[in-house]
Each structure stands twice: as structure tokens, then as C-alpha cells.
Image (tube, rainbow, N blue to C red; front, side):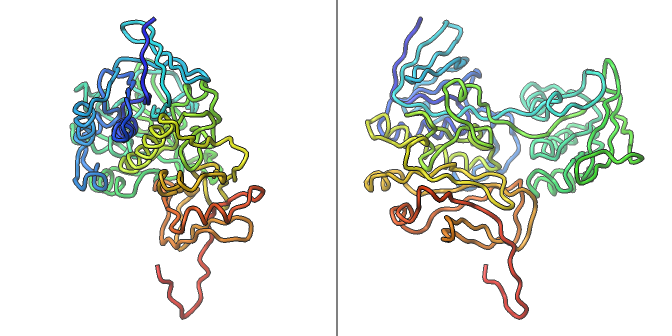
Length: 441
């Protein structure tokens, strides 16, 4: 068995892993990136559309261009990389076991960053009736076929789910000369970013069927069409509303799931995002193991992934140098729970017993969340018991757009004001409109 030693091991060479690796290296650590694909960059390599890097690089880049900015730093910065290498297991002592074309490798590291990203939900997860004919693909797989392999998986398409990848692929396939008969969405609102609805569907006159779903796939050897139907508020099919659409390919854009198999094998607890439970230091329930990016929570903007990953890389580096970064299983913790209108909140817990000098090293305290449904004229609030910790007015909020906010007051004062027996709640509160008064945003 081969053996490697390093200060910080990064699992995943996508945008999160790259940003975490660069930051850990900037803090003087030996860093090893372990990537199962044959090259770095992750999903960005197949995202050839522009719109990346506006915040991180102050430049509008395509996905591969964004990835290359980080890859260049990795290659020139003395960061070791293992590609075509799959992590099989993480032991409680942080030993990594991976397999490559050279055999099994035992990687011994002082700290680990989980940055494995996420995967798409498949047809099996949503149980569409019908045979299993050729012509049913996830939107991300179709994106890889078209953008990397140069292969068109069909000529006439229907897309189930209005996630960002699904809407982007509707435009991409149209550019390639295919016919996209429509995007079908079970919710009464788009599940992706509004800008993608406008730029990818509206600009190309591609229909969006809201409050609809696919109820049957037709065809035995190859898809010959699909039947869609309206659904009620409980997502139940409304009889008599069925519509047949002739097509040869169905793409699924029905959600993303964090790649959590390695997380579970390591023994780390999972949260409602299906990613690991973390504290304000992105530390999991296992000493020395940190998480960031889509393996923790599915992001809408890669620039936010980079910010989160840099923090994880920095704290993993500090841990490898002997700094005792608290885990999310310490005794002195306050749980953070989503309240009215909020789907989830990260971090899941807040550590209270933190030394003042470490607070300064750790940097700002950020919270991220998603709401359960589109709303307008609301406040995002955070409270501990009756004490209000945060409040901000939002004109519009949507599940597709992650909300991120920082604690502006002294973190030391913030922590001292919390009670271990009183959970923190983050929730939505409608604005109380008063005639004659105008809200200052």
C-alpha cells in the first residue's frame, strides 16, 4: 500500500476544493487535493456559459475560465494534486484511504476539508411511471454530453424541473438546433434564478409550465413522448388536465443532493441539507474535519462557494498547526434552528467557549439560509429567546436565492449574549404596513 502525508487534505478539486486549497497553502501548510476526475475544475468545466466571477474576480467569466484562475494558482503554488483518485474511507484518526490506477493509497493528514460537491436527483428518486427507455437524462449529464463530449442526446426535448441547470440547458440545446417544447415545474414558481428564466426561457420563447409535472413517459426502446398534468397545492395530479407532448428526450432538473457518503463513513452527523452539521468555523462533529461548498449546502453562486471555502481552508490550516478549533459537538453550544418561512440555516450550531484570540483569527461570522417559498416585503430576523439578534428588510426573497448575512457587532459581545439553554431561531416575519409611513430599506 502506498502512503502519503500532508498537513491538509482536500477531498474534491472543484471550485470549493480549489479555493480551500489555495487558502490553506497561503497559511503555510502542505496541501494535497484528491480529485476523482482526470482534471481539476469540477462542474465548472462543463459550464461554458458566462456569469461567473463577478464578485470573486471582478470579471465576467465562463465556468472553465473561472476554474482556470484557481488551477493556475494551484499549479504554481506548490500544491500537490492526485487526480483519477477516489476516496474510499476516512477513519476516526483522519486516515484517508483512496484508490487510483496505482493501487490503494493511505493518506495521513492533520486536517481534512470535505469539498465533494453535490449530485443530481435521478428518475428513480421521483418515481415517474412508464418503461425505462433510452432518452431520459439528468440535465447535468446532458450538459456534459453537449459541452464536453460534443454529443447531442436528442433532437426534441422536454425538461422536468426549472432548476438553473435545466433552464440553462434549454437555451443551450436551442443554440444547437434542437427543439425544446417546454420546461415543466411542479411548484407554482420557478425553482432557479429569475435571471435564468428571463435569459434562457423568455428570450427564446420556451414555455414554462408551472404547477405541472410529468405523469408518464411513453416509449419502450426510446422516448416517444411524455404526458404532463396540472397539480394541486399538494402536488396531486388534477384529472382531466393531462397533455401529451411529442419528444424523444426528457431531461431531469429536479434538485441536487450533497455527496455525503464519505461524510457518513467518517462518522460526521448530517443536517437537514443532507450535508454535515457544522459550527461557525465550518467544523463538523469530527475533530479536524471541515466542510464547504455544495457538500455542505447547495449554492446558487460560485463566488459564495469560494468565500465559504476560503474560510474552511484557513481554519483547517490553523488546526493543522495545533490551534484547537472547536467542533460542532462541544458542550458549550447553542443550536441554530430555522423558524417560520425558513428551510434551513448554516451554521447549525454556535460554539460559545471560544478564546478571544481565536475569534480574531477565525474572521467574520456568516449565516446563510434559504426561504421556503417566494415572499415579498418581509424581515429576516434572528432571535435568542426574546432577544433580537438580527433584523433586515427584504423586498423580495425566493428559495432559489441564498440569503447570506454577517454579524456586524463584536463577535465576542455576540457570543457573550447567548445562552446555552436558549436556541437561536432564524425566521421570516411579514412587514406590518402602516398607512402614511414609508419603510427605509
